[in-house]
Structure formats: C-alpha cells, structure tokens
Image (cartoon, rainbow, N blue to C red; front, side, top):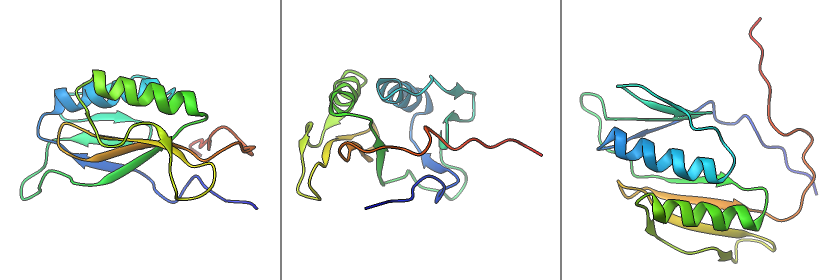
Length: 136
C-alpha cells in the first residue's frame, strides 16, 4: 500500500486569544516532535506551514482539530508531556487508537481549546524527509 502526502495544504493559520501564550505552547510541542523554535513577531508566530496570530477584524478564535506527524511512539509521548508542561489540557493520552492498525496518537487542547494531536501511523519508509522548495 502506498500513500502520497506532503503538499495538500500550503499553510494552516490559527486565530488565538493570546499570541505570546500560544506561541510558547506551540514552540514547546513542535520542539518535542523535532521542529525548530519558529519565528515570533508582534503580529504572528510561525513554524513551517503553521501560522498563529490574534484574530483580525471580524474574525473569531479558531476551533479546529490539528494533527502533527510523529516518526515514532516515543515522539508522541514527548509531545504529550511537552504540551501538558506548556499549559495544554489532556484530551486523550498517548495510546493505540481504533482508526487503523498501528495508529498511535495523543490529543490535547491548546490554550484556546483547539484539539491538537500528534500521531505515528506505524513503521513506514518515506521517499524524502521533507519537501524542498527553491525560489526560481
């Protein structure tokens, strides 16, 4: 069986009530799964394709389910521990789920109540560690 993943979304943007609090939360959980700390400005926080900012005029706080990939079960466990330490609320600790054989995930609520997950889908070989784009 073969799955193609990697470029369906260009980016995800969450509107949050407190930028500094949410930036600290996302920096901690993303570091736990191997991503760099990110960029924090007075207007937004960004890591890879994730953007976090206060809502603009007429916009509301986001309420989404967002799942991050993990390379193994230990990373899922680190993610869960980091999220709790950074102010997240447990919404389903690390463990096997019934979605498909090998699905190992953990769920938390971020400071605004977004359902944040990390998941390991089981052993797999990737064709590349990431998609690399170079401007022309």
